[in-house]
Length: 279
Image: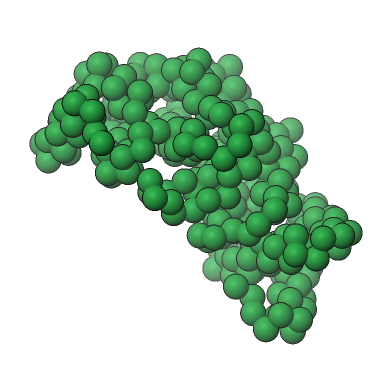
């Protein structure tokens, strides 16, 4: 049941969404951040998240306020809240903090407002997150958890940022690997969100076709050694889900990767022949 504070915040944000203000006060941003993991999906998804994204993008939130938001997420450890515990409701704070950080990264890429140290800290957190996340839930009774979908979005914007350092690329790949190897499968198109960062790295020549192909072969090789057949099927299914999406995007983006594209097609065909599906 909504508390009075939740009701007031929902009414205020609904009003502001209609009025489209030019500025917002700090106390409202603080209340929104306090409720970034609220179990009320209307308040969290449709109001707090969507308005954070809109106001960060259009400049309603000032550079000073954007810096404050970033520092608060880091000081409160919101991106990693409860991440080492068993599946719990802290997932909503983590995954919607991920989306908030995505908006901040995108803004800094367009018009830098972060210091070099702030940016590096943000990049390090962003690439560390999916290496620790274990919650594979998609749509839940409280709305979207979708950690690997939202986490994939953050990695995409991080990898496209002009200041993203190549020394963090192994951490990006480690996060994707971790998600593929977790027990149980993806449920809501996570593979087609996780591969976006790979396309970004290839498009900007931050990773070579050979390097990515070797990494994918390595993942495939590890999966082949999984003794539990049920777990191996889930891992294979997640890898193929990513491969299908990646194969199409390489064509759509006109990226010339003959060796990688041939390998992806081979994996997809082999999986289809063995299982009758590539879903």
